[in-house]
Image 1 (cartoon, helix red, strand yellow):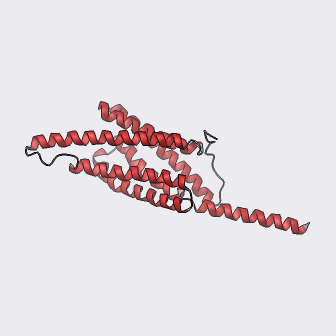
Image 2 (tube, helix red, strand yellow):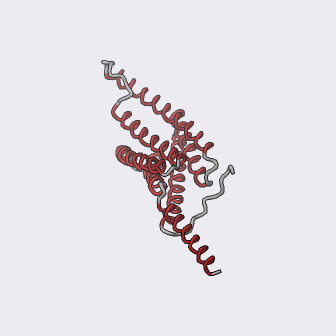
Image 3 (cartoon, rainbow, N blue to C red):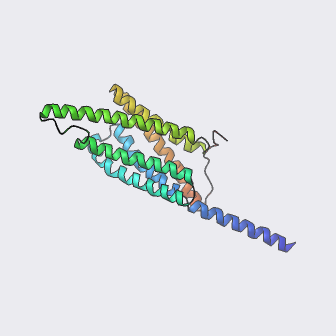
Length: 223
């Protein structure tokens, strides 16, 4: 009887150690803070906070954010967590391409260098930048909306976070299409909301990695 009890106890300890090791080897520990790192300055920019100063600094921050997400995607794939790797990889692509968009619009990469007249060249560059931004935001709005539908089997907090990203992108798209500042402001508040939700999920992952209990993340919409 004592031997059986010892066996059960050993099995429970082994299972607990395996669970602790899994919680500590979690790409979310890097992926979520990297995601939030890009989301916060984006929210501040959309809300008009120090927009003249933050626009240039955003490129550096977003590049770091995209790189962190890329590392997290590779980490997840190495663990065999393909779905997590796909999500982090997609958002890494988003932040890195967003950084390139900012650099391109700043330096006139989307305009025509063949125009000799300065006024015409400036107008063409501005129109190309505006058109490029709309195509960029529309493409990513569709991509993240599809990702939202594809990840409804995840805990609710993850699905809501991805959905909020899609909503923020839609509001940014409307801001570019209508030139109405209210859409940009709404996008900023939604970006702040998904950043804060990302912080919550990160705190849950870090707490479990350090031996704490899981925070409620909600049940998946699809079972």
